[in-house]
Length: 79
Figure 1 (spheres, rainbow, N blue to C red):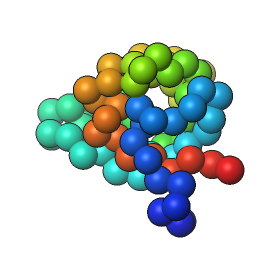
Figure 2 (tube, helix red, strand yellow):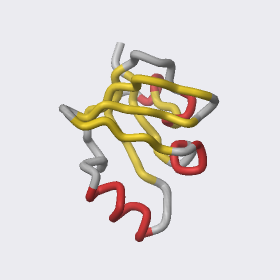
Figure 3 (spheres, rainbow, N blue to C red):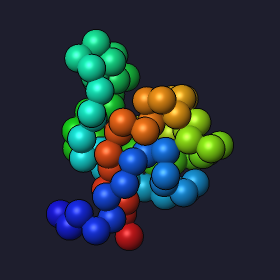
């Protein structure tokens, strides 16, 4: 996996697909994200990006995250 396409989740364009590379947040938040199915290696699709406030798709689930969390999730964007 090349780091050339690595960026924070808040920077990813709408309708792009990505894999979560790292979650750089505290343990309780990381556990909460894992409970929503968002962990390292998870494939996600960005449905909406409103200045870092993200709605993403993970399988049949739709999840909304604020920019304070999306700034701490590093993803690898699919080409």
